[in-house]
Amino acid sequence: MTVGPPSVSAVVIQPTFDDLGRPLLDTTFCVVDLETTGGSPAKGSKITEVGAVKIRGGEVLGEFQTLVNPDESIPAFITVLTGISDQMVIDAPRIDEVLPSFLEFAHGCVLVAHNAPFDTGFLRHAAGELGLPWPRFEVLDTAVLARRALLRDEVPNVKLATLAAKFSEVTPDHRALTDARATVDVLHALFERLGSLGVTTFEEVRDFTASVSPAQRAKRHLADHIPDAPGVYLFRRSDGEVLYVGTSRSLRRRVRSYFTRAETRSRMGEMIALAERVDPVVCATALEAQVRELRLIDAHRPPYNRRSKFPDRQSWIKLTSEPWPRLSIVTRVLDDGADYIGPFRRAAAESAVAALHESFRVRQCTTRFGKVPRRSPCALAELGRCLSPCDGSVDAERYGEEVERLRAALHGDPSAHVVRHVEDKMTQLASVERFEDAGAWRDRLAAFLRGARRSQRLNSLTEQPHLVAAAPHDDGWEVHVVRFGRLAAAGILRRGTATWPWLEALVAGAETVSPGRGPCPSGLVEETEAILRWLEQPGVRLIEGSWTSPRWSTARHLDRYEVDRSMLAV
Image 1 (cartoon, rainbow, N blue to C red):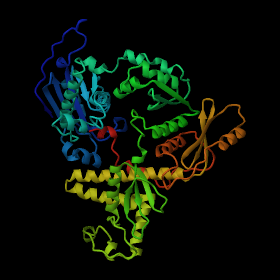
Image 2: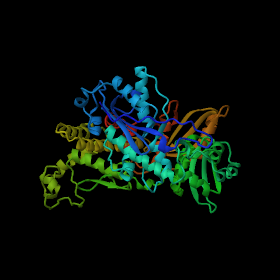
Image 3: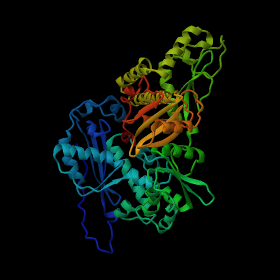
Image 4: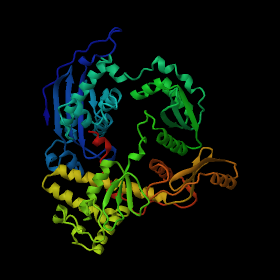
């Protein structure tokens, strides 16, 4: 364990009415970062490293760093991610020695962390297990602070790596002290940004978005006509342009909250200033509201909605239907007899294709071949990574067998080929301590498994021409008609209503839906996935049609390679 220079005692000053809040220059902060064996202490994950930097007035007062023996084996993917192995922590102190020292180091400070609930959650859990009282630390989350202080145009996200690239010379590397040092620089940069807005005390930093402006309150009348019902609401400019689309179980309460509560999202404050009208769309069920929200966002592309705006940017992996098939990344699913899985983000699709090319020796060139190609072999053929149909090295039957194995991995259980091949490569790289390369292959495998699982789930519903399902509701049953993965009708069957006449009327009035192509639904992908989540809820009953979960599940493989998002925030 290493501890930096001792901290300088802070002078405690009793504030007066003229001195509201603690100046940032006089506030001592302890910036902390942890490395762990997993994403949740409630699921048995343990701390493997603690790093902290104590600062005040822009100066470093001390540093704290130690590895921690978790008394259990560190998962391989965590070792790949952090570089911390079982051998490194075998002689390290255990958490019962480390935590008291850290609490003493951080005493009297404001705790700062990037995605603070993750770090403070582990520390509080460890204190509880050891029977140590948890100090009532004030906590500042630099991820939340960045999200409120920075514009989307400045940084694409608030991951530590993204912020450090803009504000720090320290590159986060999933080691606790390095990441804590990077967070210090980010914190100071955010304080400078807020200082230009007149925010100079800790209390102002904590609450600088908490006030409701008079202009915001003045628009409360826009919610006067909104009904108290579930549905979708659309904020519009004076010219009718849709600024924002949202959904709520209580439209009136939600819309009023935009004018009566502190808005923590800076762009929402800008949107409220521009809005001159709010239009409600009452829906029968929460699922219908969710679906209508997705469709309206897709139709209007509101500037203040961040998600679901560009479904056309999704990518699909395609196994072509030409004489010598190959893998391709496309943005549309066509009715061309090819095999498709997805959708993916473009980078994830490229990673997934890399995992597939590692496992199957299909050609990677983009040239179209005739049935009898006459070309020179490429470097991949010479390396044995392609069966080389271009120069006649393989006949159509042998190449077709490889394609069939690839097709089976795309639509069925990938364990026989993709998982085994990539795992072998990861093991080889890890054995020579090439952990970063092994981690890259882990990510490629996880990208493929996520896309394959998503495709299997979509197919299970998009293949169904007609489905009627019901779930318990406070007033009876909520009923949905689903056709080829698209919500065709929704309604509430209230108690005392004649069931079958009501159902017949609902089905008769349902939207006519044409089938989509392959795993691509007739509606939006997110709509089909919302329907799937609703169908998987306890208590849902099928009234007409049939639906089952996919026979092959990639989840059993994916769980081994997925890392909790809170751990990937850097």
